[in-house]
Length: 420
Image (tube, rainbow, N blue to C red; front, side, top):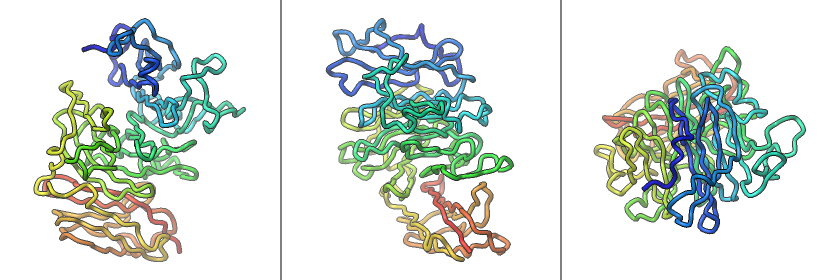
């Protein structure tokens, strides 16, 4: 059954354009309002308000009220997510304008709406705009030309984001360029680094990599594991067969069709476990009123539901719950001159790799790359590279990858500060 048909208004001819997002007003049952993000013309992005007819399952196509319009300089990186936060404001994801490598520098320019997550008040108006600016937005009332709609910036293409229904944390999956995909926790006024950083790594070392004031992702994966991240939801459903997923962020990769469960404790990622491979490329996730999670298949046009028997995908490890793997914080940290990295494996691995990188993404040292038995394992890094030469003081990234015979079943990165 069709709820809304605005095909004649939408330009879906480009690779990443179309009707990209929909969000129901928090008071939808009373006012019948909802909001859509779509592309039109050559090539504009529009956020529009619609209302339903007397039949709540049928929208009034003629009720459209345009809230926000901006022109896209290129056909890709349109963002597309719209979602109401627990504060009642509408959040909007916008990419950096497209092409590749952010040629216009939009990610680090808060005078543009591109490369951001916006936060607006749909129940108010401001000046010539059909929406209001929340007074606690980070740039509200500024006199420097910074866009007051911005909640966070420095993003490449935050295609999908969502709020944890319990904690209120805002998770965003930011699509990477050549090497890394990332998951961010979005906070007020946050600068997430694009195009200075891609994941934890310097995007263009020759251009410099000043990370001052930047917020690093909570998780990344490289293009050996996937190529285009699709953000999902923190599972807060009540299906008893999915109790092991409670509180885990469920997300996927459009290209490899993999779905993972990532567990974040508010400070660090405790684990990241491969759940399954979807039959179709994953264009989006959905959540129903009972907080159960759905997967949108792009190739076949189907909607899939996460159900209990879909959580035992890892061959030979169906009984391993998503919170079973652990990478503990390095200790001491800061390190002077050495530190210990501890990991816990619930089952034996086909291979476990721990590697140290500098902030430019250059491999410094492989700590281990071998088969490990179940249990706790401790590895010492002495602050030296592969040639056993001492490294200079600074920030380093350590990454663990645990493999079974078919795939990476757990991966996580964290930081070490080396001082001398």
